Image (cartoon, rainbow, N blue to C red; front, top):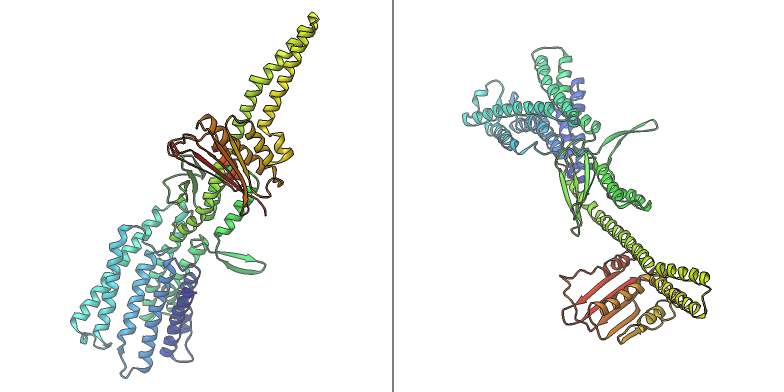
Length: 575
């Protein structure tokens, strides 16, 4: 809101100065050329206000407003001097000085800082400083000269006249350097940028031609020369800037047509919310992990209108959208050290500080997407490992027993096996059945499906070879939860007690189940030898941790060498 008020105030000052000064100079009714002068002079404040309001963080709009204010102040000063000066034939130094500022900004900084208010490179810094000093010397010298007699300009103080003259000559020289540099930038730029620079080159050329036409008019030329001069001087650069900005969407602005109306459309680039909304629909399609990252990179590329964009993960994996033809122009890390977002140059114009803020805002949900992608990949790997484990157990155990049982039955049929052989085969079948039930219990225990989490955990702990205490919170024994919740908590507890037996050499285990604060909690503690968390790889619990993460829960381990281990797991539940 503050930038809008400031921009509106500056534009109003510039416009008021132009209108009031021009009408004071000629009085009413004003001639046609004076009205044309007013209309053309209002282009700068209008364009500057538009860009400053819609893109307040980009300095170029404020530069155009400063140019417009200096011209309005100069016009007002000249008009006031013409209308109310006590002595005719004298030039108001303030009005002339403001015109000097206007011509300096218009001929040096408007083309130099096009299109985003930044220097083309660090090498142009000396040119900018010299140009600013020249403008200041020119305007300061004019003010120090005081009112100047048009009939006898030699009455001005010599030091002030020298200062103003040197400033003016230097400003002209810098303007020539800037014009040559603009042409060079146009010739050397890529296809994407050549069009935008071409408009500014055309505007600067028309501006110079305007001065020539105005000079012809002042020495007695036709009124048409005056009109052409005013158009070139006052209208060429604003028109060139406006066309370049809209034609090439330099500041995310374009012209649109709705019905029979011509509209100027802002915010061509989507907002972070719009990008997230589109990306959310992509997530709903459940793409593969690599495809998910590719779509994230494509969303970043489209949002910033860059030639390419990439998502780099912390492990070095990288997915690129677009044609990568050079180094990254913008790199933003993803929170949590999960990776980074990289962008190439924009299709038109350069990336700005606003683009960086946009990408930083997008990096937060991108981090969640990368984290979800990694979690999904780990879950897929865990499921594949579990499938192979079951396949191996069936092949090495039950399958071999069934093969032996079939062979025994064939032998019994062929030899007319007696009661002893049949008894052995019956016992072998019972053992195979018991092994099948044990294998099925490892996939999904029957007690878990029939009696719930508490009954399944108690049954699992009852078979342990060490004293194990199971504590159950109030009201939890009869409670049932979704299958995925009960399964995740059961296998987490089962893995924890198995680790306590196999690796910790525990002599006592305690399991506690509770429902607190909307969370189902499981804690497994043992008095084993413990371990160093920083150096021990927890392979068995890692897939279970991912499983809990997928349910919105968490797995935490507290352990220290010689002081036992405590595993704490929780998942959110209703109520």
